[in-house]
Structures are given as structure tokens and as C-alpha cells.
Amino acid sequence: MPIASKLPRLLPAADLLNQEFLILRAKALELAAGLDRLERAGDVTGDPRYQRLLRAIADLPGGGANRAERCQLTFSLPYHADWQQTFEFHGGPAGRNDA
Image (tube, helix red, strand yellow):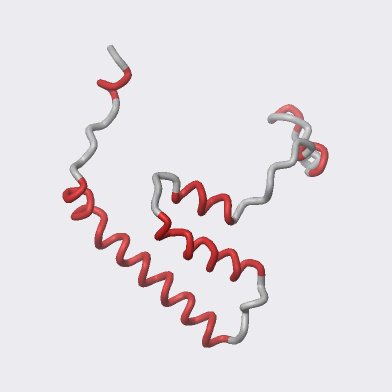
């Protein structure tokens, strides 16, 4: 059986918007309320976490199919080839550092 026949059928855009609209609306309102709470609490504009939030939000209208990836990368550390040594990672379950 071809792989394409195993993939779920995509909804038409209007149907998908009907399905997702209230969920996305609620998340947008939650995000706006969280930013309002931060601003009322004091000045956090110098905090790198706040700056990343604003950068991720500003990138949303940019379009493209990879918004989620761009958003995730905004909050991710850059990749380093020596990450295993940096974090003292010694392999799978057999190499755990359990104390």
C-alpha cells in the first residue's frame, strides 16, 4: 500500500478554521493577558526571556509553513557538537548518572 494512502485526509481550509478558531482565539487571549500581567507587575523589558517571547510573537505573522519550528528555535539553545561532554551525558539507560 502506498504511503500517501496511509496519510490522514486534510480538511479544507474553511473547515480547519472552523475547527481551530476558538482554540486559537483562546490562546491569543491568554497570551495577551499574560503580557498584561507582566507589564502591570513591573519592567521586564531587559529580561532575555521576555525579549524571546516578543521575538517569537513578532515572527508569527511572517507566514510560511514552518512557524512552529521558528518559534521553537527562538527558545532553543544553539546546537553544539560537544553537547554530550558539556552535559556529561554518557549514553542511554545503561550509561545513566543516577546517584
